[in-house]
Image (cartoon, rainbow, N blue to C red; front, side, top):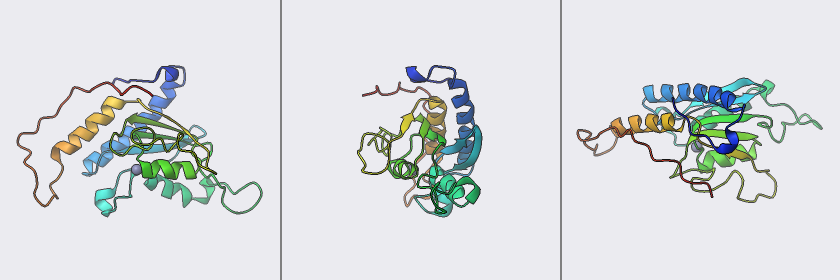
Length: 201
Ligand SMILES: [Zn+2]
């Protein structure tokens, strides 16, 4: 597999990040096998996966069932993973504090916003999400948009980017069997060349 990392990430942590991203890719592969848009993720805290999930939007016929929100539901429903606030017995304001997300595709605006409200520390993603991305692709919900309460978080792309893109392409080669007028797939060809990442602003 090949990688395309930001210069700042070419350090000793990279191997760790790639290890966790391979776990996320496994979830994306599971999504592809289930005929879902192939996006997978793992949430890591204290060097341990606390939740992993994949896209389930087709299965549940619910467009909000993205991999990230599926995993967040698991985390929030497990009291041992959501420490109480230090000053009270209520839930911690930021249940994803000290938690890192590895996701194969840049989180969409919906998920990027949820991650900020829950206090995620850092997001690593594979490929950019040019149509819906909330960590720079369309809007920088994670950091550039000011918010009166919720702190920004870092988002770093490029981990197994080409693999993430190829999963998506394989899916879209065979999709739309549920469309009212399915498009002909006879002439579709799986493209394998991948354009470089768009430059950072
Ligand atoms: Zn999303």
